[in-house]
Amino acid sequence: MADLTHDSIALIIEEYITELKKAIDSLDRNKIRQAASLILAAYKNNRKVFIIGNGGSSANASHFACDLSKNTLERVYDSREKRFKAYSLTDNTALMTALANDLSFEEVFLQQLRNLIEINDILIVLSGSGNSQNLIKAVNYAKKRRAKVIGILGFKKGGSLGHLVDCAILTDSHKYGPCEDIQLVLDHILTTCLSKMKNSHAKKK
Image 1 (cartoon, rainbow, N blue to C red):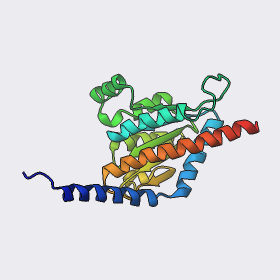
Image 2 (image 1 turned 45 degrees about the horizontal axis):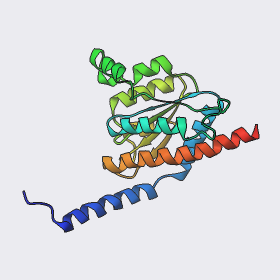
Image 3 (image 1 turned 90 degrees about the horizontal axis):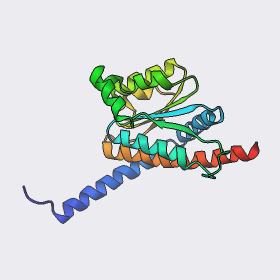
Image 4 (image 1 turned 180 degrees about the horizontal axis):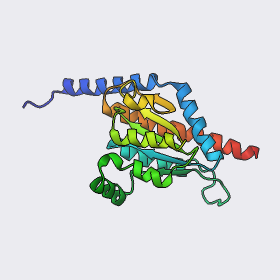
């Protein structure tokens, strides 16, 4: 197989950047604001935020939980500062593999939520296609427990999850790369918004 030429590599780069720009430009700003408000309400009411996803979205779930936990803090060493209770359910390898092995992979998030999620908690689901059965089962259970569900979803309409979540932020792309890039962009946008909103709320008290 012949090596890629300089021009063909340049074309791949331009096509990817163009796709990503289109995805960013098409994001619904009102949905982002709605998601931020839902997460802030959970914070004010001492509720928990859970984040789930598969593959690259699994790594982004870890990143998101890290950012909400640490990057919303104004005074890291002040024990009086109220903190976000944010958890990625993709991080406990022993539990995930036990559930997948003993039950099925479709159960890896649902069974964790059975232990943890309560009314008015938040579940954030990250997905490209929006059709992964383990995510759909988790969302259905979260809604049954009267938690609020935010979907950061791809493939333009978010697949099955697009119709299930309370707040769907959709990525206008059918490619996994840009869909997962947008997940991190929204992580950073939401974390920045929530840091400002949280600290403004604290100052008013």
